[in-house]
Length: 69
Image 1 (tube, rainbow, N blue to C red):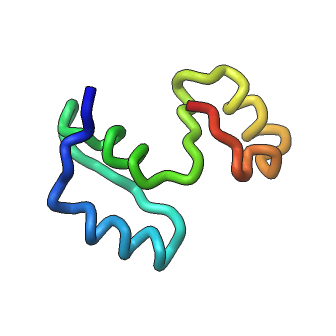
Image 2 (cartoon, rainbow, N blue to C red; image 1 turned 60 degrees about the vertical axis):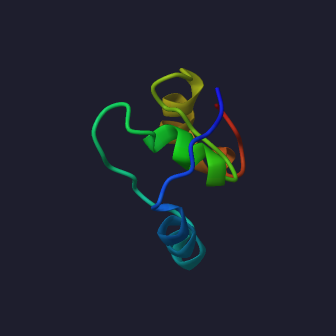
Image 3 (cartoon, rainbow, N blue to C red; image 1 turned 45 degrees about the vertical axis):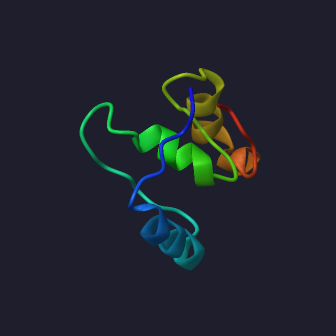
């Protein structure tokens, strides 16, 4: 499936370069995850990888720069 460019992308890039992290909110199936994945340097899908919550609780530094998507 190909990515559909969103009008929010320029604003998103500005906020990412200013803070390094953003929260994307919106209705179901509007493209939040697809858009985030286009610009993310790493992805943690805590609801899909059973190791992530365990690592978060014990040693969250291990997750820096890791990709669990």
